[in-house]
Amino acid sequence: MGINKESDVAANLQIGPTDLGMVRIYVEGEGIDLPLDFDPDEAIEIAEELMAAAEAAREIGQAPKPKSPRPKGPARR
Image (cartoon, rainbow, N blue to C red; front, top):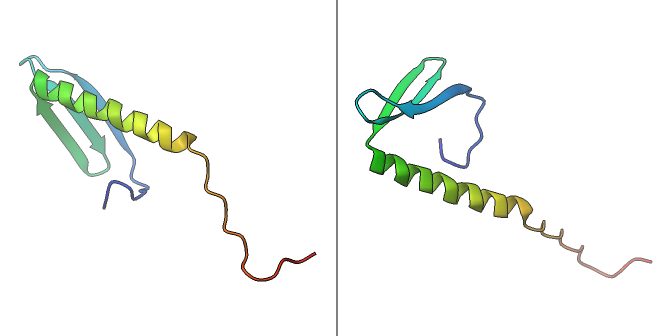
């Protein structure tokens, strides 16, 4: 599965600090129980990547839609 492929899989996402000074991203879903721990510097890098992706997605969502191509052939009146 690629980043641009839609999926019907649902999961819960929790993000928070651990008692060991790490930042945990915790993903839980049907058959999935995935704790991902990052040191604070890595977590900041991830947050920056999320912000950049959100901004890019916002720009894509606001971009004017391309016009559909005009049919070829003589113009009808």
